[in-house]
Length: 255
Length: 270
Ligand SMILES: Nc1ncnc2c1ncn2[C@@H]1O[C@H](COP(=O)(O)OP(=O)(O)OP(=O)(O)O)[C@@H](O)[C@H]1O
Ligand SMILES: [Mg+2]
Image (cartoon, rainbow over all chains, first blue to last red; front, side):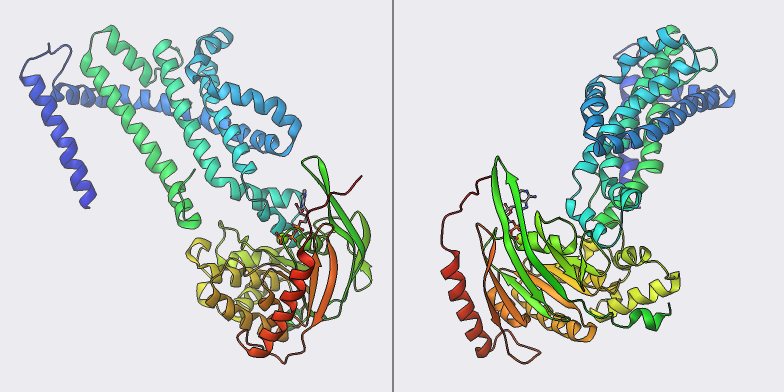
């Protein structure tokens, strides 16, 4: 409760300062709109449904691409850790591609897939998958070998060891990698949405883009607000429970 | 199999180590970890292995456990050659090796779930039985990081006992604990050994500990790893580590240990 009060005071103070700057007319209202006009934009956009539909489009792209990225990144990471051949090939490629800013996939995706949903999907997957592969691999490699040995003496073999020992033991690192993958995917999706308009759906990035075209600063700031909120919400809803669980069981947070 | 059957003591195994040799290649040269080691361990006997660092104690334990293979020679358990790990031989390590993603009871259940023929309810009862045996039934839902070092090793011991093995292989299980906790565990281990009737091979650097726990203390020397001498400890049980009689044993073993430990590491030609 105390924390909420402190946070509220902080954010109310921020808005007041913003209002003060606006009222002082230091910069043109075109550049610095009032908090009220941003709020008005958000309310209007919420009323006529643009906000909801854009949020839905963006979140859907993000979630499908992200889920797919994890679904292939996790097994590939395990294979990379298990087989030296995979590590020296795919593992090396993943290491290099993970270092590539994920925005760099956008031009390639557009050339390959055109201005389509597939391009968006591809960009999100590329943002996710390399981080997950690398995190899973390092996570598995850093497991104390004694876990596997203890498991073996108790009769665990092969697939059982992988599912019941290796994977859970690597979980803190894997969650860390999933979090990083999420951040990369989120950034590159925004870049893609701002960069091109895909006719099959206007995401939040498109709204941001049109805000700029129309010189509508209230829209730009309002959408940025929504983006920020989505980021926070994802952290709270998706990652915080995992990290709490890890802290609770392991006594540590995700690495 | 019924629960009383399951909790009944398995007959402890007789182990026979026959001319076991093992070499390792480390950083380009060969190390003779074990050189023609032979050792007989009777049913239900408590044997301690003592020796300076690097004399192959862990290696021998791993071979008996089936985690490693001997280059030559063999180990028989009740006449059967050991080729792989088995539920009849459980290992306990210096670090507890408990799984942090499972709670205390979950760690015991891990091995029990791998044992065929047990129903869920039986597994839970068996786990509780062994947690009670090590005095930690109140902590069955605790997470591993919430336990002290001594408690972790108790849980590890319970986890080793739960599948009802015939042999316990213990590699310096108390080395990382403080003296007081250790003394408590000496008492507990002797008690459990008498109650559960296991053949135990116990590796330690601590001569007093060896004299306190072992029916026999086997002295190893390194480079190459060989058995040098053995001592029978004829003291009545349960033994207290702080008695004068025990000190006498440990003094003579220590003297022997010092006599054998001299000598530079020697490499072995291929
Ligand atoms: N996997 C391995 N690869 C290379 N060398 C090894 C390996 N395992 C053991 N050795 C070597 O074999 C020798 C015996 O090792 P071992 O671990 O059995 O000794 P130990 O008696 O258990 O020593 P400590 O008392 O320090 O635990 C050592 O010289 C060690 O360096
Ligand atoms: Mg050792």
